[in-house]
Image 1: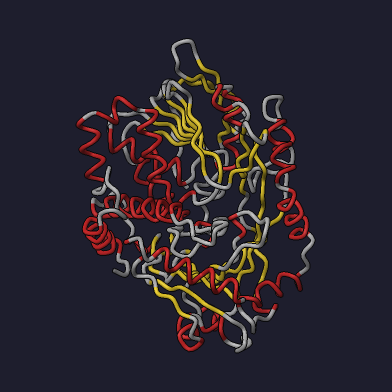
Image 2: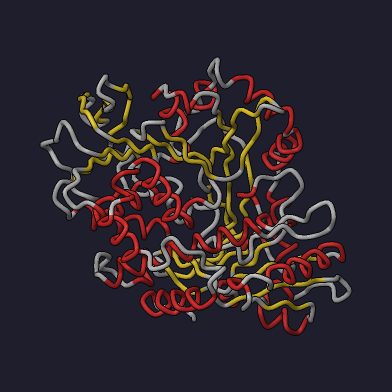
Length: 501
């Protein structure tokens, strides 16, 4: 646990709400760009990365669009839309560059394998229609430099070599196909977050408060923000004033955004989706699988529910998970309140929320069916990936809580978004991050975009531009459009982070 200060600065430059990967990333970026900034961090739990950033709560680790099929939808004309996959792949490469910078400069003191490791990424499908789709997807991605190392196969012998658990006991007449790349990674964002905050806490001008809940946000006449914070241990309240506020509280961001009452936040709502994993307890089975194997999502399911048989490194130990199985709760956080959803309904967002609900009835039906699942139902889903799975080798683990974004839409009244969205005030004095996927994996790009929007003048200065290019060698350039630069930065980050090249 990080040590808490007892003599607060009543007027910090920056307040970060929530001790997850987004706040950690933004805090380190800002402190590197301007070392004399004063920063205060407030977290309602007694631990860092206790919600969505934690390894057991995170639905996806190392999202880089290498294996996630929901980033490459098939269009009505049968072609594959690959632009989102390319963007996410580029964003993940930016994250790798920043992490490599931190390791190389010894700002992260732990071995990089404490938070990032090479794990092959695979997409796996069955049924002729899905095989046809995956082959077209592979062909489409081969047109983009960042994906040219990806292999495709329908050969059962090759697939057995790549993923023996998935192929053992499978019907030999079943059409199957998979893509495979060794460039995939597994990222423990909980460990990374703790590393980032340990460094940030060591810097002068940074104060950190666990067990502190932000209860009020009001903009002052001079444009700054008056913040009311409650110490959940002593029950005492105090007020402070900040020039800039970032709300990076995961599912808790929406209620705080609504409290800020900025015009840009009006009309936003949230739809919470919970999750569960099956966690393997048999060491022999865990040892036989080394890959993140992603399948196709069920019709109407949210992206965080894309099924995958997932190798992870957690606290130095290899783990094997399957899921996530979606569920429904009115909580916005795993440690939240059942009143979170009803209390988030306001006059200015009720219409978008109702409209989004009517347009997403398949999602509602899907979630109801998921909640009603028995252990036998979960085992049946697992056996589609691992035909010889036995229930006694697995136990149920509760995953994190996600809040999908609902926002106003002129045509529909309201739409449900499955990505992430930064909502910021016109004056750049406050910003909130809403949404879930791909989230943590693209945190560096998201926070750099936030800095460029909320710190426009400083971000455009020669000093900040130079520092951004030092931290992110590809800053301002497209990696996919520049193969030589892409190869150069991949080689650099792989060497520093100890990854497969």
